[in-house]
Structure formats: structure tokens, C-alpha cells
Image 1 (cartoon, one colour):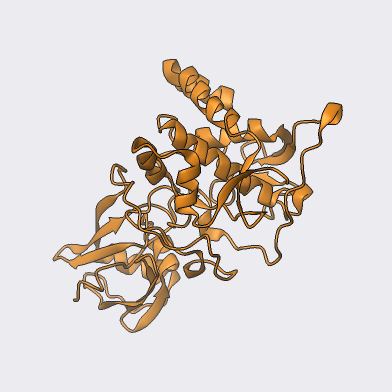
Image 2: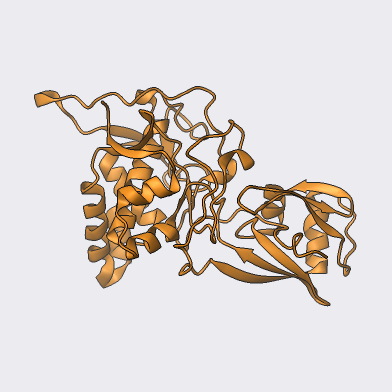
Length: 336
């Protein structure tokens, strides 16, 4: 088996970080809007100015609750990124999560959350929108460090208040993930909606400290056959190593399609079946099973969260981090 074939095989849906979410947090089931999102209108000036609210569907309570945008973002950051990360990484996440939210806000031309009942703008399910934790409950559950974590995240949100990531005057599709493993992915390789100039594959030298940077996973051949037989009509015999070959590769070095005994399966479907952290991997045939060497965690598109932390450790600020992971984009205020 060639080493080239080594660069990817199977993979599934796993959230983004050690925390409840995932790039998020998001990605696996995401489809780009078919219509362009209108420029975010300006916030009203003067005495009539009110905090922008969103309609959040809380999956834990199974109801829609109105909540101020900045307060909502506090809960998102607590769920989506470790509060111990560098401040500039937290600020980058705040801007990206705010942008992600406004792209879906009905007031700004978004379609809202299509899976939530009623007219919610967004939900708290990390596999569909963004993860969210109730700030006070989360802080209380984290013991002595809870208040310090909460204050740290509050500062990141406050210091970027009203800022979004934009491309040519429009808020971007601000997707993100846990760890790219050295190279991010191009959006068109994974999702429908066409190629986006700011969601291209870029080389990332910043996420080597992630616990997900490299992993070794052994899958017994019997388990492999069982996983395929449940959902896919693939001729994989229990106890045997099936002939594997990468049929198509993504720009970011992930498996786009894999040939198994002559049958072709999409990489994202394999990721789902085998519950792997990423479709970026290599493999070795062993007597006891298939030994996978995985790279990164999540879909790999957009902001690499551990990469953002690593870049911040090297002195990059949140604007530089966003410009790096979303080429051609810049941080702007809401509205003109």
C-alpha cells in the first residue's frame, strides 16, 4: 500500500474541542446559503439605541429565549474554546462567533435556525449551530477557577464588541474547528455552495500543542466490517483487511472519497461511520486491525482554534489571526 494512500481513510463526526463544541462545532451538516447575505445594517445611534437581541433556541430547555447578542457570545465562548487560551485567541473567537451569529440573524437577512421549532435565529446544539453554556451555571460548576474564567471571557467579548469579520463589505461564513493538524481545508471540498475565496486551504504552523494534533487509533477488522455492514453495502469480511485506496483527496490533504473493495465512499460518511476525529489520516495494516494515524480534529475549515491560541502565543493579535485563517478578510464594525 502506497504512503499516498496513507494520507486518509475514514472519519466521523466529533465535535470540535475537548469542550462541548465544535468548528465547531458546526460544520458537518452545514450548507452555504444560496443567496448573499445583505450588509449588516448599522446600530441605531442616540437614545433609542438598544442592545441587539437574538432568539436562541435552548436545546436543554426545548424553548426559544430572547437574549442580548453580547451575552449570548459569552456563553458561546465558554462552550466553544478553553478559557485558558490566550486573550487574543479568545478575542478572535468572539469576532468569529459574532459573525457566525449575524449571518443567521433574521433581522439581517439570515434564515435563522432551520432545525429549531419556531422562528429561532440560532440554537445551542453544537452539531448544528454553536454550542452554548449558561454563563453563571458554567462558572459555578468550575469551582474556584470559574469566576476567573468567566471574567477572562467577558473581557474578550467586551474588547471586540460590535466587531465582525467581513469580506468586501459582507459578513463572512465564519466556520471554525478545533485543530487542523497543520493545514486547514477549503470549504468547497466539503460542502455545497461553491468556492469561497476566504475559505481556502492554508498551511498552519500554530496548532502543534493541541492534544488532537496527531492520534493513533486501532480499529479491529471485525469492528470495521460491522460498521460498514450496518449502513453501507460494502463487501468487507470480518477478520480481514479490506483493499483500501484513496479515490479522491481534498486540497487540505483529507480523504474526499475512499475505495473499499471497489466500492467508493465519501470521506465524511466514513468519518461518521467510524467516529474518527478527522478525515486527515494515514493507515497501517496490522495483524489485529487497521492502525490509523489521524491529523487534527474537526472539519478543518476556517479558524483553527488551537492554531489561534498558538499564533497568539507567538505575539499575533486577533485581527492578524482572523486575516491568516480567512485570507482577504478584515475585522470591521457592524454596519458601515
